[in-house]
Image 1 (spheres, rainbow, N blue to C red):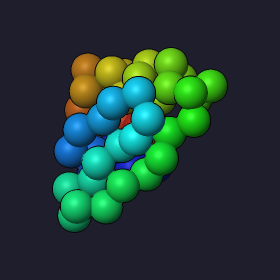
Image 2 (image 1 turned 90 degrees about the vertical axis):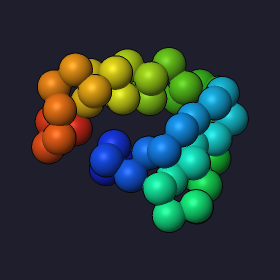
Image 3 (image 1 turned 135 degrees about the vertical axis):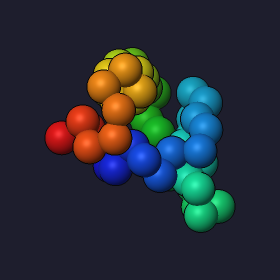
Image 4 (image 1 turned 90 degrees about the horizontal axis):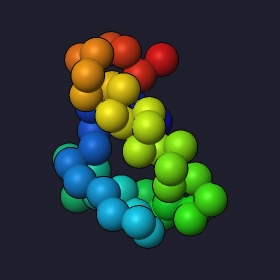
Length: 48
C-alpha cells in the first residue's frame, strides 16, 4: 500500500484520500501501524 494515500485509520479500516476504504484485519493492525509510523518518520517515498 502506498502510505501517501492514507487519510486516517482505526483498528478495522484505513480511509484513503479519495474517500475509499481498505479493511484491515486485526492480525495486521500492528504491522500496519509500525509501517505507517515508519513512513511518517522517513517521509514520502520511504514506504518501500
